[in-house]
Length: 168
Image (cartoon, rainbow, N blue to C red; front, side):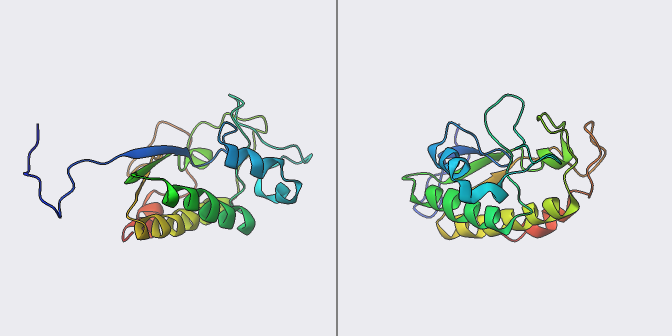
């Protein structure tokens, strides 16, 4: 059921694709190649013993957004790939704050740093600006919210995400 008549300046539908925000999912060749490039070691989270942190379902290592290199790579490479994708209008980024606010299922069982949390928000803003310039809407899913969450306590309120992303 259509609620508004189609017009040339009014898009009725959108085609979106999926990406995971916190995990360099292994079945995407771009993320897998980044992980296998030894020059990118700092781009992935590690525990105190230096072991790479992987999500428990074994789909890939966790991005280290406290690394500027990881941020630049994600925006330039993942964002760049998306802007070159034909006929998409949106990207659903799953679990954008899962590593900080959700139940953490990984082999490291580590607490992420405040720096990682803040830099991930800055990265999402930068990514949104890049995608918006190409006519693509980023959709960031969240475990956090405007009130109490049933998951572990988030280090910061959701309003920080909202303020950083409100105008993009």
